[in-house]
Length: 131
Image (cartoon, rainbow, N blue to C red; front, side, top):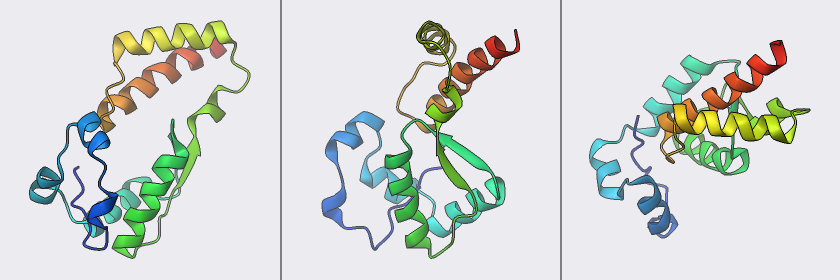
């Protein structure tokens, strides 16, 4: 889902570098994006009570706060650091998992692609722990 920028978000907060990285213009988000209330409601319904992991929790937490604040809805899930799942994993295992994840689902700075990348990475780590 694309998010329509909230009216409360200042234009000066728009980052041209982030636009280039993600390939999403503000105009496209304004035309095709969904209202923050709709996005927050859907996220809360899908993730209520869940722990959600991010490879950039500070950054993602900042944007989640802004999104839920704009929607005036309380977030019903918690955001955690993906690195917490990797505690005790050796450097060699991390490198192997990264290589496998890059082949299965390259990191593209797009939500779906990045989630698939992290899932492939974690699946390799989890499989190694079961052995």
